[in-house]
Image (spheres, rainbow, N blue to C red):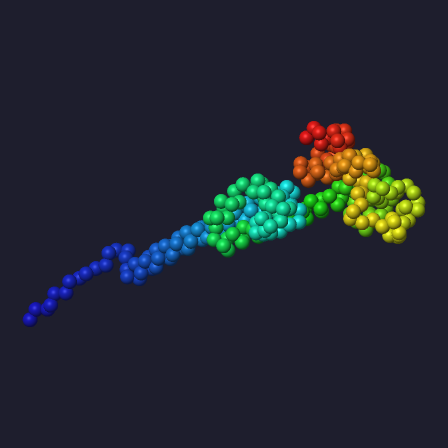
Length: 257
């Protein structure tokens, strides 16, 4: 009786089921890693685009407090510009400053529109804070150089300013009062009688050469060296304000710019 013939099936040299299985798992892991990396790249790209969009709105919003409105809320300018004349002027200024605003707002979903307003407002309010922080030390330095008070005004401490400081008091003194008069100085500091300073007073620092014509209060208004330097520091650069002393008085600079 012959023995059954059994085929001798041999595995290819260098190959085994366990090795093939390991290779398959390795390839699957590489594919999974590549897929995750692709998803991560898409997410990072979307986040980068979102950051760029956010930065764009914030940067454009910085113009609002400088050339549109100092205090009004952005939402009020848009929603109530037909009911109040001052808001209407601000709305027109906003449209001129951000010419893309209307078309962009009409393309966005409501939540995206609110986010855009939030970022614009963030840029606007951030600018006001930056400007006031920057001017705190700059104005003190300008007053020290121009009026040479003794002792000089501390550039970091605002508590030593106002009417308690003679140099600051001279600049803040209403135009109709004489700061050089000791009685006037004492009355202003004590808020006594007719020397009480109110929001209706025109301070001396707003006028060219710090002198006002009481018969024509518009003459020289907003042309003082301090105001011109402040304008130049905000709208051009602090270094341009330092060059002011060599450029002439406030009236000359306003006329030539």
